[in-house]
Image 1 (tube, one colour):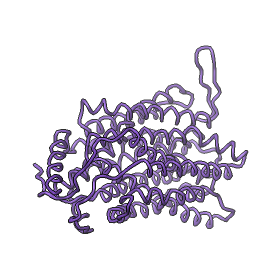
Image 2 (cartoon, one colour):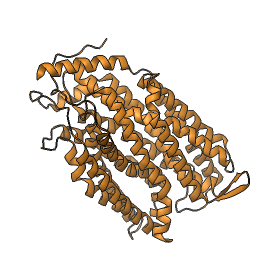
Image 3 (spheres, helix red, strand yellow):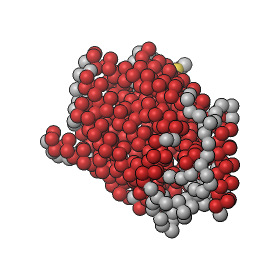
Image 4 (cartoon, helix red, strand yellow):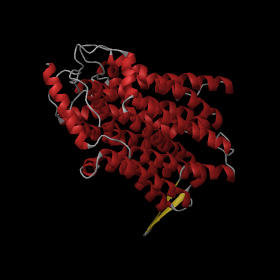
Length: 476
């Protein structure tokens, strides 16, 4: 049985219930983040191999090196943010100050220089590293912000739902508009099309991040007597069993979804190709670009519906049980892609709807569970380090992002993928098919099984909230 630490830790909370305006304001930041994240997951690998012009193996290795570097930065950024003191709070200033540099970094990363193979590879390493460092410097404080805008666990679950509805809107924007914008803005020049498309997305991201800054407030603060101690913060993190479990599950969850997402453009361009959708009384021609965009759009809508329904699911099951069951179910449907043929158009759409619907609640619950582990850490050890908890959580997320992206590049290389958008061999097509189905499904199932051991039930969280509220009142 877990026992709480002695009283102390945070200033007395105020206004635990948030206005709809503030919930929406907070959520807009994740719409901004997911414009980049979805681009990283779905289009970055195919951009590097088919547009930028580097090999799949080199791309996989680059993603491994740069994303490990980025993952290490997450806890560092968390510790910096936890120790920041300004009139606007600890976390919100980073969101506003780095919005424009983040947009510039996005354009640079999707610019193809007129260089040789070695020069291009060096440029890719430098610009992608810059982009993900800026993304970390914005996203770590943004993630931590959810832990301090209200002390109420149930309210944070509601905020998380708003957040992920907006996140899926960001994904919808990318899925529905990226390829059409590249085609229209580039007018036949795909390299120029990606550069201009990222510039347009950058302007949107700046506006969304500034809205988050102006529409939110920070309310849960450490007490003045809590002294910052990096060693103790890290020690508390490694002893936080609930955090260790959700972090482990996150690595497998992200590997699962990144492998599927990154494989999608390859799956449609080289395996499915152009098809026809036959409906009663009418037949639609689907180029692979249209098929890809409609596939991603429909999946995002299904994910959004699943995210909105999260509250209904968690009324009947604990958060961890819902997370585990839905992640495993999503992965099983993903494995079904191994059974469909390129002309099974309706089956491809249907499978994606089920994969995406069940994954919607997983994404919402992931971050609500992380904020619960921050409360548990304070309750158990008497110290609060919200930004470190969330930064370390992003570290786990990015390990999954790293593993998923790197595996895609290496597996493609292992199956003989040839860069440059040329026709692929039968062996390569089989590898692409597996990347869309069985390989990622294995990781999703493991992630779900890990969360069955998670100990923080809804009843236990009510006990923790009550104890912390009493401590805060005593400390005041």
